[in-house]
Amino acid sequence: MIDVDGLTVARGGVTVFEDVSLTVEEGEFVALVGPNGAGKTTLLQAINGVLTPGSGIVRVDGRPIGDCSARDRGRLVATVPQDTHVGFDFSVEDIVAMGRTPYHTRFGRTDREADNRAVRRALERTDTARFADRPVDEVSGGERQRVLLARALAQDTPALLLDEPTASLDVNHQVETLSLVSDLAASGKAALAAIHDLDLAARFCDRIVLLADGRVLANGSPAAVLDATSLGAAFDADAAVTTHPTTGTPSVTALGERRDRDLTVHVVGTGRTAARVIARLHDAGATVTAGPLPEGDLAAETARARGLETVTAPAFGSLDRGVRDRVARLREEAAVLVAADPPRADGIAGLLDAHIPVVTVDGAGGPDAGAQRQTASARPETTTRVASPAHVLEAVVTVAPERELPADD
Ligand SMILES: Nc1ncnc2c1ncn2[C@@H]1O[C@H](COP(=O)(O)OP(=O)(O)OP(=O)(O)O)[C@@H](O)[C@H]1O
Image 1 (tube, rainbow, N blue to C red):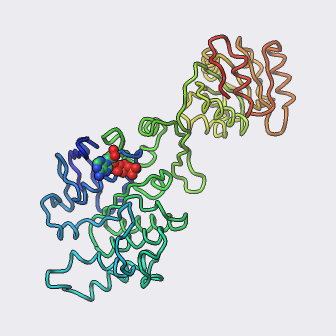
Image 2: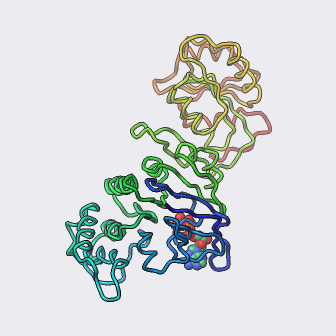
Image 3: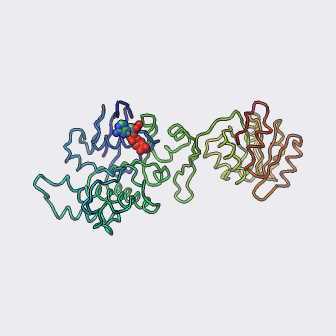
């Protein structure tokens, strides 16, 4: 078990993080995520004893790392470093065999057979046995990364630290490597990996620790940590979190830095057109509210993933009073109403009867004649029609009341 308690580390006279505490239990695979420079590598180096903390303590299997000899540390913690450059001309097998060094005495190897077994097994599990005889500086960056994982496995430690273990791997080996680490954890190791790919972290790790602004910002299950608000705070950028259709785990799409506009838009509609309208306006910095959207609809999922205020209602059936009141309130707070591919039979005319400009957006199948008619008859003098979500921002900015800021695209 890895136990980090109240750790503060400074580098070059600058505090990288302060009072960081976390644990990784035996059998757990935990991801350490956070923006560049948050201190993930620094934390891993403080755990394996390469860096001495200003204050706080790290224990592995109950033993304070700071008090251990280099040999004892090597029997407790194995590290796969971020920099895979190996400065000497050894074979792959020689490098992996170096993982056995903590078990050797001054007088040489004590159990040659155990060493050979550990090295062979590590080569096989990492799919590196095929090129075990090749010089390590003649294998690819991704292959070298797996060689260093093999070296860490040969070390046979209760704790395994990995710094960006998938950075140079192709998609297949990314999945293979993280599955292997997950299996190693399941067999009793405590594994902690700095990972930039949040989708992979969510898919393979039991828990995620989010490090940002010099502290642990969140620590919990992938679903609990990867929410739009925490990610926005940590990475200074908007992110949308959805459920990945194949893995069923959280999936994060970074949306970049948003520049807020003084513009509130309410969107009503369904499907892909409404989803694209919501995304386009939100990306452009508008405050977007939406509804009524059919529950489970793509537009509802897009709005939810972005943390937007949204009213949903069953796909079939009339809108109840509560829904209508909430929609009316959102519509009143908006400067512009956008009707994107609105359903014909849903009686949206009442919703469109707003005392604000209306923009209608045609769906993928072209103009929806019924909806166009309803919209036009609701507020003919203030309705603008656009043929695609790509043009919605332009239209909204053009019809928005005077406090609108100028459009930039
Ligand atoms: N050798 C060093 N000397 C002084 N400062 C350093 C050193 N290495 C890193 N730092 C600083 O410590 C801070 C944390 O760096 P660290 O590499 O731990 O972050 P990280 O979260 O691993 O970043 P990345 O995601 O880019 O790998 C940064 O501000 C960095 O500039």
